[in-house]
Image (cartoon, rainbow, N blue to C red):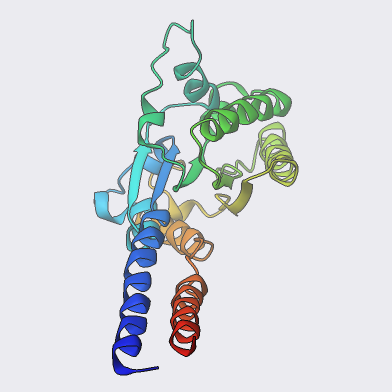
Amino acid sequence: MDRLTGFLAWLLILGSLVFLAAIEVKAAQHVVIGDSMVSNVAPDGDFHTRWPEMALSDHGGVINRGWGGTQIDTWVDWCTPGSPTFNCWWTADLEPHQTVWIELGTNDILIGLEPVESMIADWNILIDIVLDTGVRDIRVIHGPHIWRPNSIAYNTLINDLALAQQDMCAERLYVVCATTMQLVMPEHTYDNIHWNQSGHDIMAARVAAVVPEPSTYVLLASGLAGLAVLGRRSKA
């Protein structure tokens, strides 16, 4: 290759890296939906020390759409035409390139001990709503973390829901049971329900460990392919 061709080759590589890096950064953005286990701030923390922000902010940014007190069917009803609460506001943030994390189920158990089959049916509807936006990476935070030593029925329901969620994730395309909320240690909550700062820290570490990372191989492959093309042209 002459100097001009070599210069153009490396310029193509640099341009490819910049362009594809921009795509990868955009692809690493995250949206988290859920109940107060997502939205609550620990008494000894702030909005920046909630687990979604700590785990995902350095991986392309995070939109926290936690809403305290919500159940799985709350989010479904918001996106069901004809529902008294119809207002599918939370899907406005969703774009096909994003990873969507969902943490729900605690209030379904706390409020009414709803049957697992009913909760899983609502989960599947919720997943379909997310998929309809074009999103193809859904991460389920499964298994409410609250454990009650004196309630066999309650604890059984928690375990049954976690197992059913795992089966659901195995059956659904684009859905992964990423990690669990389950912690049996009350010292990680400030009211036996919501995370204190140590609870947020633990959840952040669990989620950060399973964050999908963009691959750099596509960047290198694209640049080298461009170099090879120009090299072949210079020999023609």
